[in-house]
Image (cartoon, one colour):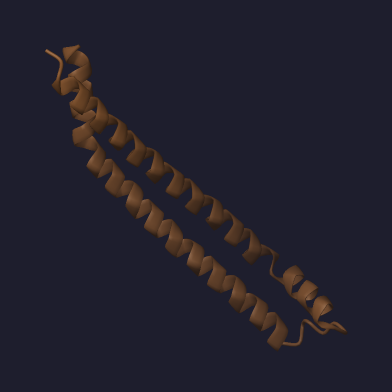
Length: 111
């Protein structure tokens, strides 16, 4: 049982730094997502302003803009996925911290 306590204490002591790294990853991934969304918006605007989107109606012009921004759309999807992974990882670490705190409380009452 002492080994279990020691492992729990070691992990409890290490988790704040690990959570801090995960928070930094989540913030960075959110920033990257915002940048890729801005790049997509800029590319769509550039395509429309340059006259590359000259369809007969709004739907056709929107489709042309989408066709001209495939790479930017892929970047947004990739960054959305990375951000979701970062948030999920952070949430898992926070849940682990909560569980270890509960275990620590239980272990306090044991000899």
